[in-house]
Image (cartoon, rainbow, N blue to C red):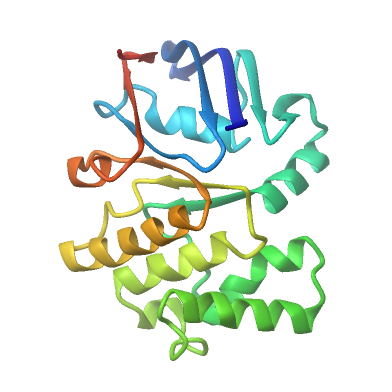
Length: 223
C-alpha cells in the first residue's frame, strides 16, 4: 500500500506559563492508505498533539508532516486550510456542532467552505445523514439530540467532502456504551469501504478493533 501519512522526526514543545513541556520528541512514522489505526497511551503524553499535527491543526517545532502527497507546513495558510477541508475529516470528543444550525446545515458547512453548489450540498448531506441513521433528524438542532446522535452528525459532517483521511480524537469519550457501539459500527463500515481512519483513544475495546496500534509515552513512540 502507499503511505498516505509520513511523519519525519517531529518535535513539539508547549509553554505552560514559562515552563516548556515536550509533547513530542522526534516522532517518525508512516501510515498506509486504508489503514484503521489507533493512537494510545497515557494522558498528556502526546496523542492528541500527534493527531493535530497530522491534521494540520498545529505546527511542529521541527520535522515534517506529509499527508496525501503534500508537505503540510510548506503550504501557505490559505492552501493549508483548503487542503484540510478537502482531504481531511475531523471528529472530536465534544462534537463541535453549531447549535444555531439544523443538523442538515451542520453537515453542509464543510461543503460551503469548498464552494459545492447548494443543491449538491443538500443532496449529499441528506445521503450522509441517512448513512448514519439520522434521516429523521435533519431539521433538528444539536441541542435536541442525544450524545450518540450528535457524534453521528459529527461523523457525517466530517465525511461531507469525502476526505481521504478521517481523524478522530476520543470520539466515544462522552458516550455511553450503547452510543459508543453505534459510533464504532459506523467507523468499522467506513474502514471496510477503504477509508483511512486514525483514532486517539483510551478505550481498549476500540483499540482491539484497529489494524494498527500506535503507542505513545513521554512524547515518543513506545515500542
